[in-house]
Amino acid sequence: MLRIAVPNKGSLSDPAAAMLREAGYRTRRDTKELVVRDEAGDVELFYLRPRDIAVYVGSGTVDCGITGRDLLLDSGSAAVEVMDLGFGASTFRYAARPGTATRIEDIAGCRVATSYQGLVEKHLADHGVSAEVVRLDGAVETAITLGVADVIADVVETGATLRSQGLEVFGDPILRSEAVLVRREGSDDAFAVEVLRRRLLGVVTARHYVMLDYDVPADLVDRACAITPGLESPTVSSLQNRDWCAVRAMVPRAVTNAVMDELYELGARAILVTDITACRL
Image (cartoon, rainbow, N blue to C red; front, side, top):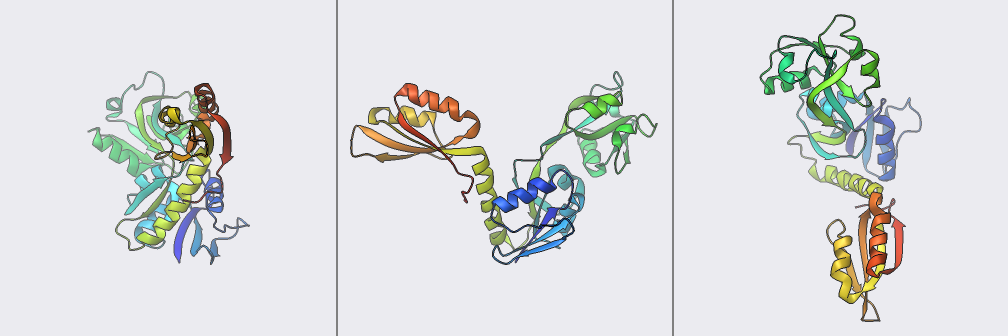
């Protein structure tokens, strides 16, 4: 039975649970549940602190887990990324008082407050910058105001919290993070993890694509397929009327209307859009 670590709280918790449910797995009904056994899905879910998940996976205590890429890299564990999951996007950046710093080299000799000590220390080392990294468990934005640090490194979404403290971001992003599926490097559970990966991939695909069916004149099939290339390639079938062909392709949800307009202009007809949320790859 595959042991999967799932965030028990925080911004990744609800989206991770929703994705597992959409993939067909049983999840907890009460936040007090710490372990859920799904016999039908042949998995066991362990609800753990998001920051600890990569450590548990890397040590082999659990087989795989869902966590943030930032937490994975900060942990320094033997866990490796299997796939990104399409939610929990965030940007990790440096920030300071206006005019204090404009590039990473300006951090040299400064105190940098962060909740991601390992990640920041590696980033600074990779750029040849020597600075003191001060680890804090939370409320990093107030570190400069309280005199604990000269610079902070933290997750930035809208930047409103930073501005409220009189701070602004500078330099290139340290990392662009999102939720990822991780597994232990060199583990022997490759097949079970691959089953999980394919089911989650089915959810990710269904969330971002719709199925488009349409008829198009046979002499315009190549042009139509260029408009709807699909994930790999569209399916083209002959019709009783040999002058026409039926085409089926997966199209990104965000551009569905624009694609349909192009097809209508080309001369396609009988265009049908189908939601594929229940699809499993």
